[in-house]
Image (cartoon, rainbow, N blue to C red; front, side, top):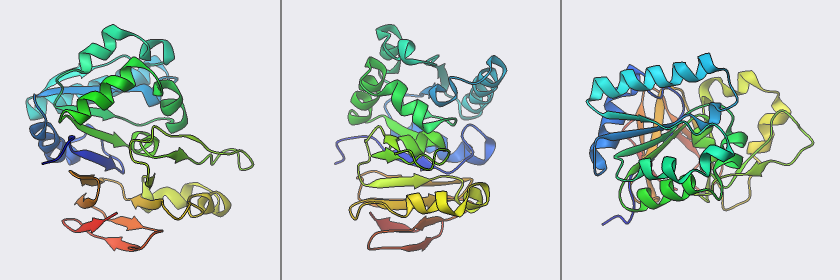
Length: 235
């Protein structure tokens, strides 16, 4: 029996109808229908943008019959608040949505909010990260904007997977030189490119399953290749 909840890496589509069935299943795997949404990666964006995240999260929660907990953790001071951390307890699903992965990891590492996330995941709560959220769950986050700068430390809950979200569009957005940063991963790290509207999920952190409208692409490691929906691969 698993000693933790299900974990999911999503290429894009959090809180949207295309991921409704998937998010409903993640919730069903957890201990309750409490849907904790953390917009931390977008914490430096405008109030209008943050309200957008809250709105689409509310709409998704209504569609799947969940209780929305939109947790206003926008900066490190927020992440240090015990009253916000306690709202995570007993959740069925904790979701880290999109924005800046570097800011997300820097904001959460070593805080009561992150400790609550990890504790509840280990007790059986599902944990998902989409786009920036998926990238931050790995061991490190390469820096595409500053080519000569080192990447930043990730949240590390997945020490052997580096995620490229929006994979079917990603390399059209960044220079080839930047793209090569991901492919220089250490031997023990698997680089996983996840297409938009697609997820890679696991119950045991070894056998990973593909869900959605696209594919998952393993770019490094022993099992490089393209994996279609409903397929399983060991990482």
